[in-house]
Length: 194
Image (cartoon, rainbow, N blue to C red; front, side, top):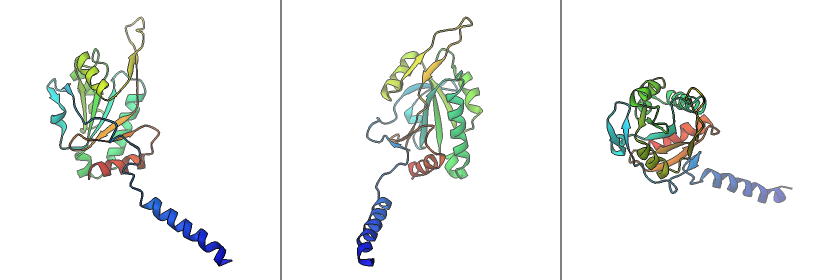
């Protein structure tokens, strides 16, 4: 009996060993060879012109949204804040979240500053002209569209809930969605910081 089970046992051990030796870097979605490095020219929440070089040196989680968003944006940013609180303080202080508005008509720097302050000091709002926003959304293939205005002039903006992660040098790493487990996101953030 042992002679018949031995090959199966060996195959199982080899399978477990190979799985443990996997060279997959990310638990979420690897974008390292599909997304260009961090590159933009925008306006920060203090009204200053900035580009990607102002944010190099720290890993960055980049999320595109808008402050009037009723659901995706506050939920995603609250999740990122919650995940950051689970990191030790040095890691938390070394990570930044860049919230890029796709609604520059309503999201002025001061509006963004008030909005991002609710999520923590590691969150920074960025805006710009329509052309600047289109340049960065086109670069990262971020789709968004404006809904019709209601009688009061309000409208919604349809956009993705994906968060792009870049390392200290602005090189792309991973993409996370709301369907990814927090444990996977935390593991990937720690890997990004190495």
